[in-house]
Image (cartoon, rainbow, N blue to C red):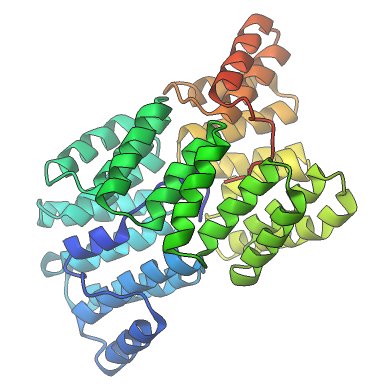
Amino acid sequence: MTTRATSLVIALLGLAAANGFAAVDPTEVTLRFLEQRVKSDPMDSVAQNRLSWACILEMRQSGDLSYLERASQAARASLEAVPAAQNTGGLVALAMAQFESHNFRDALALGRKAMAIDPGNEGALATIGDAELELGDYQEADETYGKLKEHGEAPSVIARLARLTEVRGDNQKAIALLQDAVAGQNTEWYHIRLGEIFFRTGQFENAEREYAEAQKLAPEHFLVIEHFAELRAAQGKYPEAILLYEQVISKVPRPDYYQALGDVYIYMGKPNEAKPWYDKALAGYLKSVEQGNSHFLHHLAGFYSDSAENPVEAVRWARKDLEVRHSVYAHDALAWAYYKNGDFTGATNEITQALAMGTRDAHLLFHASMIFSRAGQLDRGGEFLKQALEVNPRYNTFHLHR
């Protein structure tokens, strides 16, 4: 999963069906079959498109980000075989691969190109809205999702509206929307997203219930396990959290999960045990960046702000994250990095932009309270701390840097 960006549930199966890829089954057998098909006939654009989508779906199921490069390769091969004017499926597949790779501007441009060719393409429209949301173009995303809703109120559309509603500060409405999505399509994805909002608003019992529902549907899914790990750590059940994170890491050895395990040890007061996990996390983050990926820019900013404090590096990576997107969370990350670096004017400017949508996120509000207080606006800082507590009375417990 990628940052809060990837807390956004993209109903890929729905998009696949909308683009003629309903037969995609993201299993190793299907992937091998499609790989053999395109190897024997590289000009088979339909098979290339199916392979691209299958890779994206497998990435979602496995957490293995390496599938994204293969997805992009297949989509590009499809477009080389059949030009975009006759191959909107290839355009949408490439747009989705770019979106999942956090190349949001490229995804937006490709989605718009597909829409210009095929104005009724729901997959292109959904990708455009998702990219606009990640880029911080919230009004545009609202309008795009409104157009998507005209095609029908599918669970995937409702989930998108829930995410936008959450950014706009109405957590209860977002919960209600996600409950509607679950009623329409009972999959682990929607239960996890619903559990996330309950967790972020301090409703641990409700989060537990939703994660348990997700576990019934997908007992071994890495996202189910890591969300339970986060919850157990927040409940102070550290040994169980450690075991769960170790289980996740055995399935998906990603740097954000290394950092999470290190953070658990810090909460336990064991910095020596945290250090090797932080070292592995940093090595993984930097390797990803060196390979030209944008997935972990946000994580690097948070890592250097909170886990292995280095304010100069925190500012550096937060600025790079803001180049990729202009979401409220990107502005929040830079504001917090500035705060840690002693630049309270810069921090105030950035947190003001982070608060512009009225987002009711306890961690964002806590950052605002600290920043305004340190900038000499004590009353304002106190008000934001009060709001943070209202949103989530448990905001200062363990949480994963997403």
